[in-house]
Length: 396
Image (tube, rainbow, N blue to C red):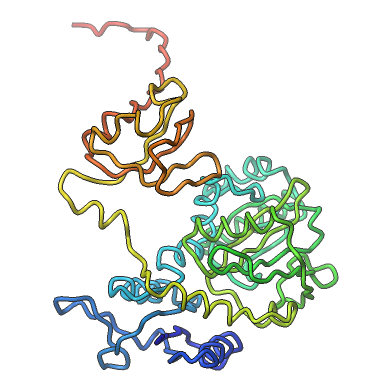
């Protein structure tokens, strides 16, 4: 396998470990500065230039995109995807995970447990927002930040209001999040590779510091995850479109609460704490998956005129409840069920004998007109009847 590691820090521990692990397994590997690429759209096929010359062929690319170059870095990764080069982390996955608000919106859609969070712009909405997440103390987070930078604990409402007002005055967007007291300055970092957690550690903050990041002086120890924590970590990474991710979770009273999904997790802390070859696990996963480059399924399936992808919901009063997919008549309407979602369960390529239940969500490909007819009209809000005006008639 010929592998490119995209990194602006070729001498940092993570880049060196990944390079070493690839070399030890007999792969051809190079660490390439992300900023030295140029995206070539002048020819018949998508291409890339590196240091002013056409890039040679690579089988796979492992992005280590820094926070400061997210836009350009994801554009380079997207170009590799267009060239059918395998990447464990898609451009969309990196961009989604980097924006804390967008990541929270996506995860909440899939019933992933998280600390109560809200996002407001107007000053008058700040105090109601704090009350919605349970009141002070609250955690205030910049939308883009790493290693604990831009994360502030406000002890009371007045302090929180002042901090948010100051940050917003400098054009910063912030999240307001509940403070999970029971975590006691601790969190868990689970390193997800593919469909499993390959290593996990508990990070504990130093002294009175509530942020447990190693860069803030936090200590680390190896931890064996409960199955529920492992399941949530893997599912959160998959939802974000990441096959290599560091998932940070708080230990809440009712189970794991996902704080963040990191698309470029550092390896030094977790390898030191667990004594496991995490870099090797990442390289092995890429080697096993290199034949399956990322494909934008919606884009590919929507090329045919009149056909597309849509999600159909089986409502409780629908005729489909209790019928198998074969009996549903979907095939007769030229509609194919690609995936069946039932709560947190995902059934890919469901069989014709699968029985449909209320609230099942079907990801389908087929004729748009047929699928449009199966989507119920959205109920409109009934407008209130206003009082008769004092002058019901205008003078002629």
